[in-house]
Amino acid sequence: MKLWLSNASGLFRVTNEDGTRNVAKMAIFGVTGVACASFASYKLYKWLGKTNLPISAKVGDNDNAQRSSANAAPKSNGLTSQTNGESTATSDAASQAIKAKEQGNEFFKKKRYDQALSSYNQALELCPKEEVKLLAVLYQNRAAANDCKKNWKTVVADCTEAIRCDPNYQKAYMRRGKAHMEIRKYKEAKKDLAVGYYLQKPPSESVKQSLILAMDKDAEVAVVGYMKNRQPVLISAETVRSYLANFQFDPVTTCLAKFSAPVDGKRAPFQVACDHIELSQYNAVLPYLDEQMALGESNGYLKETLLLRATFRVLAGLPDEAESDIAKLIGIKDLPPRYMSTALLRKALLAISKMNTYDAFSNMTDAIACDPKNGDIYHHRGQINLLMGDITSCMDDTEKAISYNKTEVPALIFQKQMCELQMALHGKREEDLNNLMSELKTMREKYSTEPEVWGLYAQTFVSLGEFEKAQDIYDQAIACCPNCPTLYIQAAQLLTSLDKGLEKALAYLNKAKELDPYYENTYTHLGHVYLKLGKIDEGLESYQKLLAYTRSAPDVKNAMVMVSSVEAQLDMKKNFGLEVPNIFNN
Image (cartoon, rainbow, N blue to C red; front, side, top):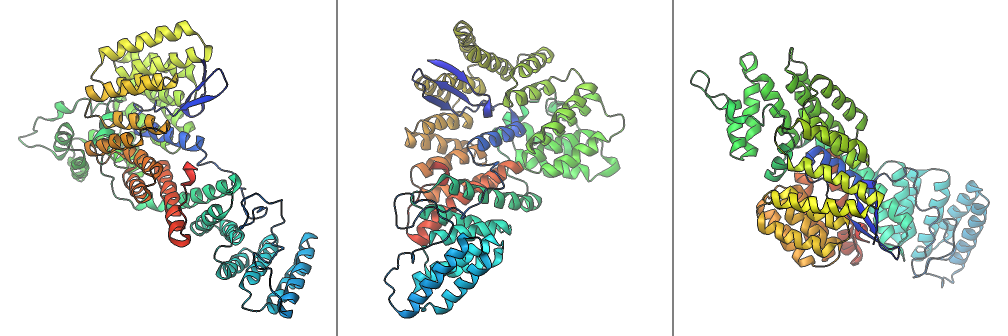
């Protein structure tokens, strides 16, 4: 087996001797925390072709498929020369309308669009009302001429008439979808383009990309108002556990016990909030922190409250409010360096969640300048470098993070070993790879109760294409750590990516949901599995829950796109009686 590693999106690929590739969509980001996980999901989403499509992508101008043909037709100019399935019109009026249409087509080919419009207008006046198929063609051809003149509202009106005359007219849906895109009516555009895509035989890749672009643009607009008006997300215990585990130097969350003692015989709201954290009652935390902040000048825990509230606002999907708290914290006079560096790190991770790597690295540099021994900064910067494919920088940062931690942190050890694994794969150094695998096995035995260690160990075998071995490790991991939702999700993800054991994958995901009903990653994969099983309603429900529980704006946008993709399937079934595959599974 040849080993080849791609940096793109943090995906390991294994190339066999025959040149075929196995792709493992590895979740090497399982220990990265909320912000980096958002960054990773965006990169994976982008790699799958779901975002970052060319804004200039257009549809309808070169629609080369005839609705009644199973084979691709030769290139056309966007006109319909035949009477769209109705070639038996024999009345004098219909014949005259066809003659005027053909004259219009000749003008169109010569780019004499005003004359073409005049001919199409004449044809529409002559055409008998009962000749609905011919009328549909005439409206669509007039829309094509107006398309060339960029009269988008007129294009929409004519395509609407064409569809009224012939509800299955694929070209008209495509052209109207294009016009809706031009006037930024993305919600209408995605509906039209979905119909155009699914009615096309066979569906083309260019139309598919146009549909994805429309869904993406609609979500881009919708996410702004959604994030502005949303209420705090119910906080997942698994998300909190993973997130806080990645902040070993946080001056508040690592020292909760020291805040428990009453002051003057009373316990402040901040202290009650800390109690709820220790009891894993995470959804009760924010109200007490708000109460503490309302004390104003008598707030004896100002810096602690601001930092902790910023943390939990991130976890509750309130990034703007979190950013406000961080700004207030940074503005405190004589703020201790550890608080300052932690605040700057939080600010950097919020920048990453917005895909702003420049500001993220700048804030991390400032954090190091004021507190160079805060290992969390190097830990997270290393994770981001790993996701971006900069293995050397990741290794340097990870080694620094390890050196500043007083105790051994399994996630850091494995992060270093993941770097070494990538280097071994790139260099095709079999001896180094064998030694590394032995070290990973030793780590797994040493930290047999650490879910992240099990998960990363299994994912290493996925990266090598040893899928059965990886599945066996996941089974062992679940037996050792039966209360970790992430392990069930990763095991299900492996089964799903191999297109086998979908029912077992579904059982794993339902177990993860039972363990933590607010963990958004569960619903990402549940939706995917349900769609593979043909359970569209359940897939939609899963993606709607994903939308409800996901936190960052990019992830909310992605969830909106997935909801749109399933709604398109249901619309085709309701309006056309067609069972169609999801666009992202097709």
